[in-house]
Amino acid sequence: MMQTRLEALRRLANLYAAVEQMHSAELQRMTAVLHQAQHAIQTEQEIARLVRNEGRGALLTGDRMSWMMAETQQETSAWRRRGLDQIRLEHEELSEIAREQYVASRLKREQMKRVFDDIAAGMEIEEGRRLQAASDDRFLARRRWTDEQKRLRDKQRMKAS
Image (cartoon, rainbow, N blue to C red):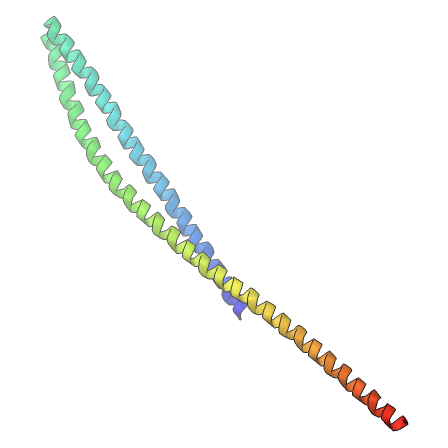
């Protein structure tokens, strides 16, 4: 009976471990997506910096057409950056949710493992007590038998004397 409960707890503990692993994978995926968004923002910032430099150069040389193109590219870059910032914020929120789920599932798995370990240890102690009780019973039975045999021999000696 207790063994079947322990086996059910073992299966449940394995299930909690699988859920934790799933949440860990989701957290890693969300972290990777967040890093990609941050990298895209950095790339966009670098593009904006280069375009600004081109625009300054065009202003210094008096190239109005190149300056206007640089201004348009800067505006486009700023627009893309705002979009990427919004995407980054969304991914930060999703990453935080994934982290919370992972932490919660990890705590549940650890709690389940402690429950399983406690029950298994209790069963081991109980088995040890049962074996000791059986050993004690055998010892006492052997002692009673030995004492009874001695009493019978003493009784026979008394009759013989």
